[in-house]
Length: 568
Image 1 (tube, rainbow, N blue to C red):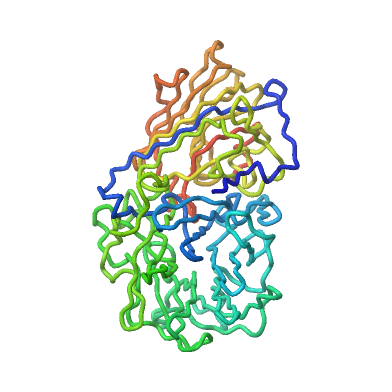
Image 2 (cartoon, rainbow, N blue to C red):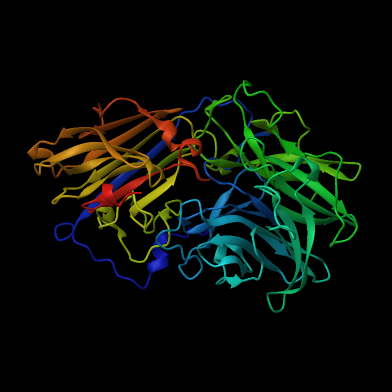
């Protein structure tokens, strides 16, 4: 398994920083432990949904022989588009990113966190034994295609394709024909907000260009008279002599659903299947226990033995009622078996709940279990030669500001703050549980106004918590907890650091219990002192912060002297 990492992106750059000479924060350990109450299951014959917990939305899947590859959206995090490999559909190895070089994904200053990479579609084409990935990269080239013979060995530079809108996806025919379907403006002016259409274009495999005209396959959605919104995320399949167009409909919130259309011709006309929606949770009562919501944006596939399955996204809220859908983990990847009735695919009957525990044969042995769902455990002492590829950055980096050394992970504190739409010195990874405990150990001595390093819990630039070391107005070293919820950075609490401890390691801890977040510090790693009261973690949810991403945890350093005024 290839472990791609961010250091490879800058192999031609140098990073020779002295802790004494420059403003460096050194991190020697990160831990994360999920503490959710989980349903019991037999890992030999059952699996737990989600199969990828945390913010892994818009799943697309393909198969070559017995090998499955899955891709997810990554928005404005870098590297972009994580790629996973599995042989049993339950245990997934991370094999790299499709867009791991600045030449592939150029997300500059000012690109919103929920812009960037939308809804990748990964497909293996047996006609030329090539994997294709097509994706919308808002702020970095529009709709692009990258190719490879092996997803674990890197992808080509992007090929810009003349396809408007978002959510493009491929259909490859056995005779070498190829088509792209996508979400786009309708042929006539939109009649209401969310009025969209699905278009189809032929794609030339030899020239990697669109050829011929666009055909509008669907206008509005399944029931046009009801003014359905956001027909998107299309996937086109050629199965048993018929063409099936499967799309998300209703937006990716509570009304999310998956619908399917059928035609005898690739260019239509397409007729809605009578079983629609083939997947949704919008008709279920909000007071049901342990709800899974917003199910949709699915991709259908068949195993070598003829079974049908689907991957899709869902939200797992910790509070769900008439006023709130609170979730800090974003949209996860789930897996369910599919079936066919009267020539129509069904993922889940309307009115049924998405299950957490699902029966499945042919699951790998216990020794091969992957740490991607359930109560995830992570420990990183930054002693490896390369950085764990699960560490991400905000937007595309322009300079090298971190390094793995004999001391640990060193971050350069630059004049860029976490409150700006830029690339701060911040390495982070997705929150994967409602309830968790996470810690970091850091060595850092602030020297000037604006110097700050610590542990951030981050949804976006204006919704986050940061606990760390800095200087107060009198130039004394303090540990401080800052909160930003909107336009203002608020100091929640601070405590002075004695002169004997200004250069010693400090430990920070975050404990989350649904929306209750508590922040702690320690100088020995055993006796913890809480800083401030329990805080409102709902500011880390998409309902409060807006956008499409989950929240992250990570190590952060800055020397920004006016971070508050730079925020928007």
